[in-house]
Image 1 (cartoon, rainbow, N blue to C red):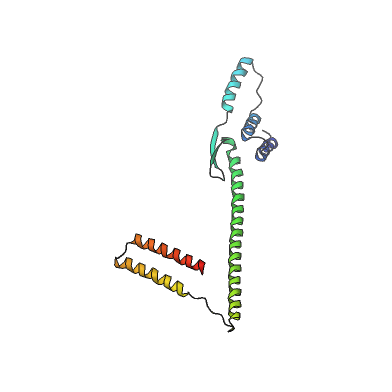
Image 2: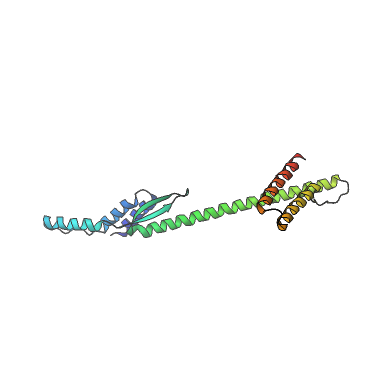
Length: 187
């Protein structure tokens, strides 16, 4: 078989111009030696054997789509190394792209958090300047926050003493948190 013809067929398959099954049949046809001139009966018998032997064995490959579904592809066994090389390159490229997208997402998260912190510091400095003292006042818990934490502590103490079940305490804490959130919105 001429190597140039073989490479040309493999390029056509990798470019998607021809299907892998068509490429396999072309490669098989190129690899067959020309039949010697023989009587018709012997030639027909040899041709029948060659046709049955020329059928390439097929390997089934299960491909996973991006949406999670699967697709089964039949690949001739003699083309499997080429198919594997193409799949390997495709996986390498998609992994590289996913890593780049993850890194960009991480950078955006860091940038957003940094901007939030910078804006918070600016607001605290502006509030400290407005108070006339010129010093930063750390934001501490409000009296409402102290009452909220004390109520939670008392509920947990009752669970520890056995006066409340964990399920009842969970319900009370949820209601207490909802009340605290509601009071925070109205004030």
